[in-house]
Image (cartoon, rainbow, N blue to C red; front, side, top):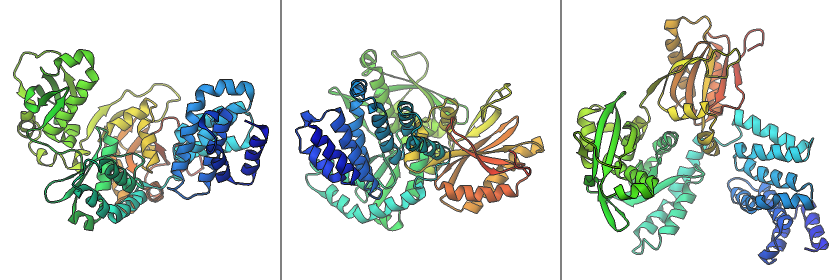
Length: 507
């Protein structure tokens, strides 16, 4: 590429003429897009997006990433030509992630950009911004607001959805239908699985949690806030419902619920342990075991309902051969649960709010180290979202990263138990939860459990509007009988945020 052309791109960049840069590069044959030119195009998209308001900016940042990420294999060679290429590539990747509310992905790239250009003030400022946002994610629009915006958009666009669903060539319109529904839901969700249908009376939007309990809480919240006027024509459901006579076709072979043998046992807390065998799928176990499990889970969702399966099934094993002992077929499993596992709860087993409220008690071995991390002192706790706690203790941010992009903040309050009688610890936690909930009002927080440590008490939650929640918590803890209190997200490698300090200012 000529020096004059590259100089012109730099001049346009200084003059904020980003669209001119994009037009000029895209006018060239794509085979001429080398590392430097592609990176310059991505920078133009990043800069153009900066001048737009969300959500219009997001496709441009994503376009920048789509251009930059494939260049990683060329980075080492590019550095030989331009020593500053490592900084610019990492910085531009991080910049796009940062403004897509993916700070956990942006941070390591900003850190590598700083390694490549030590002392760079702009890079250090972004690093500090990432760390602040991950510890105290107030810069992301809260899910409470996103939910309101998404339902407003859906209400405005649902007539178009119904028209697409009513078309005689519905299959041909399928792609357009999914794309339009995704667009209407996008104010709330960066990524959401759903199905559309009609039950003969109403249209149906089925939001699918895909086995993720954290997503279940999010979808249940979203469903609860659907506009009343929408419900005249639509059923808004969370999770696939039970289907009698369901058959799954695989490789030209039909597999029904009756084809699957089940050895079921009741576990603690009204749960289920399942061992299953299907003769039709047995040959596939050697070739693709993961596919067999995927098919079994689909069949299980049809047998119990997706939310009931999430609620009750504690473990599931697919056998390579049938075992001895009494068994039932998968179509009989719902009756087994209804009569022998949870007779009282079964009628509401597929209610999304109740499905998430199954609490699991757990125990821990308190750390004996002098300098222990948060929650390492826990010896007993209870949670209706154990996956969050497991991920936190393992340093796995997968749930946090997904929820962060949607403005959902799982976290916990923690406070010292010094001076609190052993018999009063649980009462104090309950009082704090009730007081904060009352001060917040509806639609701000869902409490998910808590834990007791040798030194600290913990109160767990999922925040739908973190700012409102923290403001309420500050007021409640101010009058609580604890010396100090703090907030922490379910990210292991972030700092806590003080809500109440000791009288001398030391926490």
